[in-house]
Image (cartoon, rainbow, N blue to C red):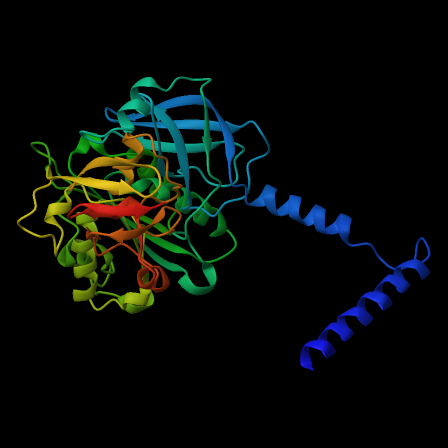
Length: 397
């Protein structure tokens, strides 16, 4: 009886609807179809899934680092939050792959800067640094990520902890924040750690910004200083952070619980700096960090099985496609790409879940920083960008 009543109601609704369409005269009511289409086009322009970029200029920064300045050719650059990144899609020696890079330029310009540091033994960075030429065109994602300054929640007292090439998102955030500080009170202290003095990226520019902006303090720390170096040395530990944040006149440590800390750098740096901030009494909700990709040596991560070597080879069956050989010490996504299987990717750091695949059988290792959704975990999905095979696997794309 309920089904009959439902069908009757549905039939009556259709009759009334059709009658109203026939009675409606031109010009009566408002047709939202065009507006909906216009809205969709606006959303696409503000949040493009893909962008086409052309390389305009290559700017040497250090002996191992270059800034690549791009223009967008298929549409105007979309707005982005300083600190966000884009993912470059590349064909390196016949291998289709991608890598995320933070935007180092502020959003007020018509161009987009990516600053790339060479990674020893890397696959993509040597290609970009040695092969990319002015005029080359690349496809990328639109701006992504949540590592940016949020005035409503972060306040106006900021501390940036950067390591190595982790300085790149801070340059975008810093330039934008200093512009905002002309109308809003913002205080920024950047503590930047680098192994060698010659590897400091944006060093002169940062020093000049500190001279010209009283609300910006810049502390450069070198862990392996040259002879007769008179600057700060060591690591970004609790003592050094405490000393650098002390009031210059009273030498007293301010209340760190009201500061907002941002961390970006190598994975080893996160553990070091997080421990230091906890020691200093900084609440975890006052700490923001940017993911920095998979670890350089996953076998050093907590929980890695000691009996499995990084070069141990496992058989990975891709259901309905083929099987490949994958080393234990390499992210599953990298192994798939080397065998011509392209998995959607954005962050490549275990956060966005774009690269998730379903694990049908076998075991994988996920580093502690991998942010797997609980629903994915329950349904057997893994992030292939930070999943390492611990035995033979069967997966479904």
